[in-house]
Amino acid sequence: MADGTDMEEWMVSSNEALSISLVAPTKSGLQNITTFSPRFTYSIFGEDEQIFGYKGLKISLRYRANDMRPHLKISSAKKIKPYGDSEADDVLAILTEGNYLPKIAYSRESDFEESSKQVVDDFTPPGELHDTFDGPDGHYEVWKGSLADPAVKQLNTRVQMLVPLFIEGGTYIGQNDEPESTVDETSDADRWTLFSLYRKDESGYVFVGYSTVYRFYWFQNPTPPASPRDGWELPEGSLDLAELPCRKRLSQFIILPPFQGKGHGAQLYKTIFAHYHKQPQTQEFTVEDPNEAFDDLRDICDLEFLNSMPEFRALKLDTSVELPEEGPLPDLIVGQKNLENIRQKAKIAPRQFYRAVEMYLMSQLPASVRPTMDLEADIPSPTKEDKHQELLWQLVAKQRLYRHNKDALSQMEVDERKEKLAEVLIGVELGNARILAAYEKAMERSKGAADGKRKLEGAEQSASKKPKT
Image (cartoon, rainbow, N blue to C red; front, side, top):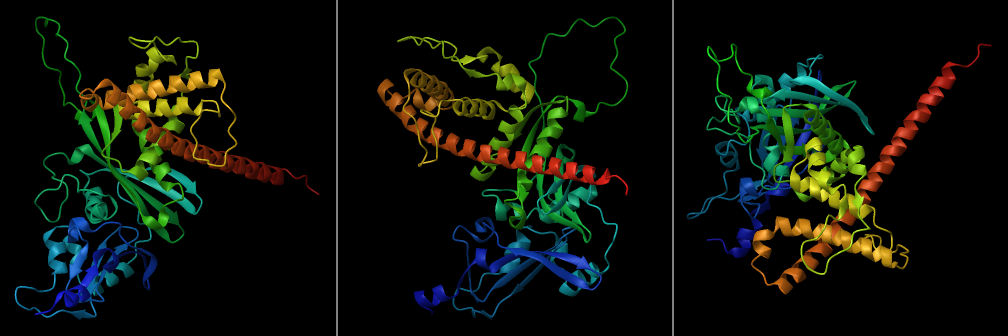
């Protein structure tokens, strides 16, 4: 019987053992593009993210970069011999029984490599080309398709294992009991839309990331119907449910690690948001349980979009308002009665919209009272008017915080409630300051890129108009 020390020697980190690669198919074989590690493996291998019974364990998950066909290979330098009731974890069984990958991932390595030599030069991603943009490292395309499309569904099935590996608490979408499918074809496949992002160069397509969006019916309060006239009949023809009023919810969003930090996530999000904002049947665009990193990206993109709306830019604190010593507060924002109309026009969910309003108003505060993350900033002394603006903004923020936490705060005594709101407000101020700093940097980069493009275009135009000699 091995002791505790022996047991530790046979424990392997599942995060370190698993490696993910993108490989490019060529006529001479597979060429490695990039290799990276997962962020999480606890949903597959347990909370401790440990695998027992191996030394030098390697779990290699290779994806063909264009069509994302996967191949899994498991090897180890040494495997512990069974003793008593203990034996090495069966890694292959854990993965196959969990339906994390389609069956094709477990084919022979020679089949995977040989099929990759049969390169299709005219390969295009499934769905339809939706948008294009140029990034700092190449040309990019966004493709869109319904999961009711077999080709789109196949891509979704192949990349679903990336969800638990890179989204904390992430789950598969619409999974049924069939190991070859992650979407139940008989239920809601047509409600799911997949947006896939690819880099395209002379060698072909490279998968960069993707997002899924679900369509919910938008319930409207019923109104009493008018009395039907004689001879009234049901309208002829079939009803397209996709044309009914709806809410769209972004469910999954992944940019693979090698392509992060280059603005691709923001471009993909803005492309998706703009698509649904233009749809007359889409009444609201929401996001399902975003993590902090995605929250930041979303905040920056939403602020950029809202700042394109003149009615949003017109919002400001009403510095002429007089605050009563007791009783309800008056409107603190110029244009406050129009806020809900602006939100509905923007199609942004209430909580997200009012957070954006709060950040925008904070950005207008004088430097003397505006919260900042710059500890070395030269902050002037606040005037009486500056302090009044600060108080107005704090009241706006506290109103939102109270509405969002009403159930918990209403059970506290008044003094305790005030203390708790003041405590939470400090965190809100710092969080807003961090987002606004990132937003301003993003706008500077965007302006610099636009100016550079204009200069380049001007140079090209000048060159083309040189007088002939």
